[in-house]
Amino acid sequence: MQPTVIAPSILSANFAKLGEEVDAVLAAGADWVHFDVMDNHYVPNLTIGPLVCEALRKHGVTAPIDVHLMVEPVDRIVPDFAKAGASLISFHPEASRHVHRTLQLIKAQGCQAGLVLNPATPVEVLDWVLEELDLVLVMSVNPGFGGQAFIPSALDKLRRVRERIDACGKPIRLEIDGGVKPDNIGEIAAAGADTFVAGSAIFGQPDYAAIIARMKQAVAQ
Ligand code: DX5
Ligand code: ZN
Image (tube, rainbow, N blue to C red; front, top):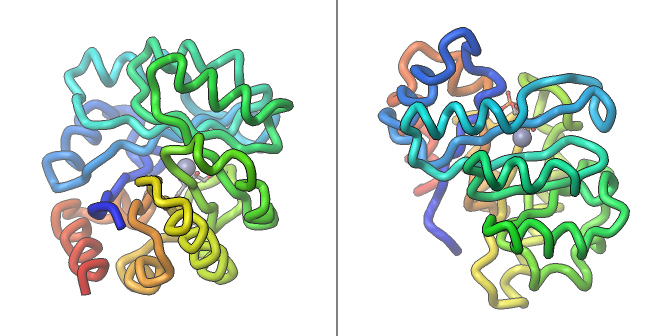
């Protein structure tokens, strides 16, 4: 198992002062910045693109930026995110015509690569590509919006993906995204996740350090 990573989703941050918000969560103990990219096509919402990622780098953010692409097609936007300073790029297999090719493209651009499983996507989608991955992201909500309720079947999916990662023996991270809160994060960690995205649970609180500490404590128990 990899060391725990808390990755606040900036989807729930105050976009009018995004640089300050990112500085604040990182100073409060966050490990990565989770960057949700939505295109109003693959998902019914529209958010931010490479320009904002580049602006965060120019602002001085040095922490890993974990780009979660909810866009279709995928390949066209990958080089732009790599140039903009993305550290990891994850995408949904349903949005790419050639999943293996997209993984190769992300790595050729110097980024780590992740595959995202929607609530109804079977774990078998990992067959034949697991060894190419740096990260598997299990969605515990349907992609498109922050603040939704955790879908409990994600726990069983985490356990199944964890088995596959352990059997493969590579240091692949297992990330969970959607409805993660201090009161369910312990159970989620026990199911095998090591990387935790949380948007509304963190940015909805006045004290980012307190909530991140509570989450890390619950994972460690
Ligand atoms: C949903 C996004 C998530 C979302 C998480 O499509 O991928 O990252 O912002 O938000 P919360 O933690 O509020 O469920
Ligand atoms: Zn996300």
